[in-house]
Image (cartoon, rainbow, N blue to C red; front, top):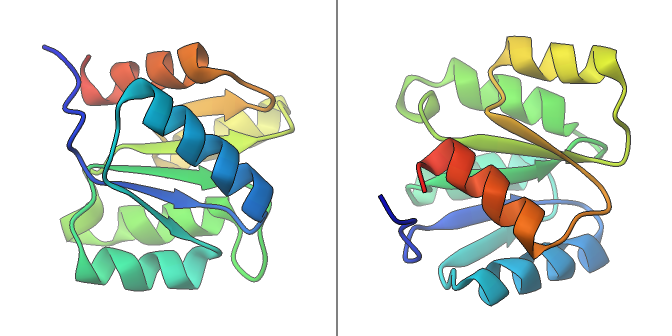
Length: 127
C-alpha cells in the first residue's frame, strides 16, 4: 500500500527552524497537508479542530514536553490510534523505553534526512 500523500500531518516543535526542516522534508516527500503547532497545548487545540493522520512531535518542549503530549493524545479515545513519531536529539535508552510504554509508534533521532523520515512514516502509516 502506498503512502497517502494527502493525509493531514501535524508537526509539533517549539523550535521554528526544526519545524521548517521537517515541513521541507515532508514537502520533498510529496506531503501537502502539513500543519504546525509551537507547543503541546496548541497541538491539542489543533487536534480538537482537525483529524490528523500523523503527529510528529519534538521531545524537548515547554511548557509541555513531547512525552506529556504523547500521554495526553493516548489518553483521548478518539486519538488513541493516531500514529505518533517522536523526534529528539537524545537517544537515551530510558527515553525510548518511556516513549514506547506511553504508546509512541516510532522514534527519530536528530539529525535525520528525508529518507529516514519517509521510512519512519511508512513504518507507522503502512507504506
